[in-house]
Image (cartoon, rainbow, N blue to C red; front, top):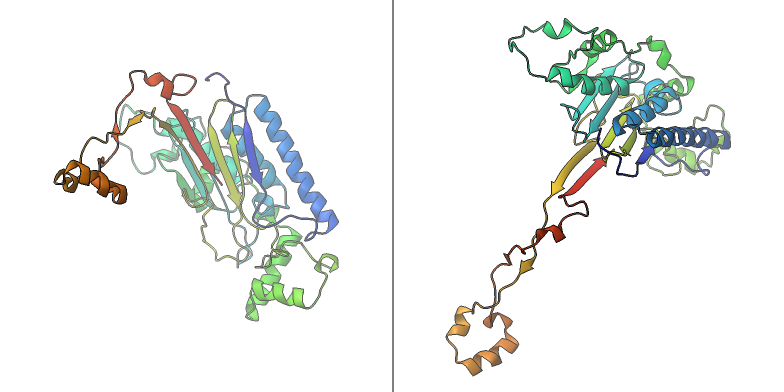
Length: 353
């Protein structure tokens, strides 16, 4: 492991929408804020103890998946058919892994989808290791699932029943579908179906509540998270995510979600799609040489004019004087001045969730 040189940092978001005291009941606000603060505290503690970005980010997502108040894992929303289909993804800039990103989707029995995505990434070191025998049959990736071997081959995105079979063989915790049932999400599902049956959408429903003066916070069955275009009623509903920079200078982004309320079965969103719902990348900027601009070349028109006349016209038309079509880069004798304080090229990175 490289020496510790970077101050760890992290950002966690609990879903799309605005969590404020004005649009949540006092009890609901306290639940959201207390949950996020506790996850922040535990993530900070893990990073201070030297945890990698991959471990810290996925563990933060696991805590969110276990909390039914967030739209991921146990708190996932239902599809139109009344089932839960979870998805998750992870991406890291660490050079320790052969795969940079892994995603999973359409999961109905994996308790923590984010741990499945992480396992696929870590086991990729075995999957992509050189083999003495390159020939493989189509079923060979199921032969060693229970051991430390991989099993996902070079794949970075798996979904559905085959993915869950792999997760079960790897020893990930599996649960019955009833584990994901929560009353608040089921009520959202039923209300959504009823509005759709009457040709209403979330936007119209929210406008009607607002114009009718209904104090939804005190209404029976109000769940505090029905989406709409009004910022006052669009509450935590979507993908949760985490971006972590660890002590070793590596970044990791982890995301997890249940998707959209009453989405069509089989729908895969942006959350597990690299470049759409998440991204992490690292690159190196080489030292930039100093630029020296030469202005000795004359304009073709200026070369035809007498010296005195050229000076007069140059005052009005600068391009008649000396000019340089493009800057000419000339390296200075000592390039170390352009490098980072450590004497190496500048290391850059970015992560988005």
